[in-house]
Length: 54
Image (cartoon, rainbow, N blue to C red):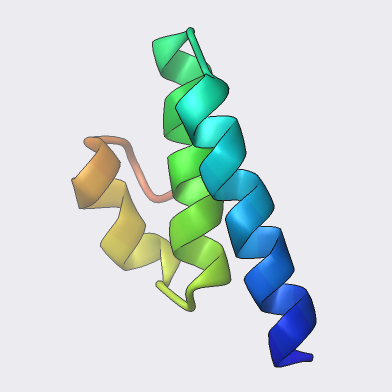
């Protein structure tokens, strides 16, 4: 399971580097943080978005 999660994290990290649109970058960032185990309540202030948006 950890290897699969590490692979997903790497894929999201690469997508973040390729993202040209700020909104897409923020979406990938939210996904990256979520895959690391960060809760939506903690991600929301990082992205300056509401918990419902995250």
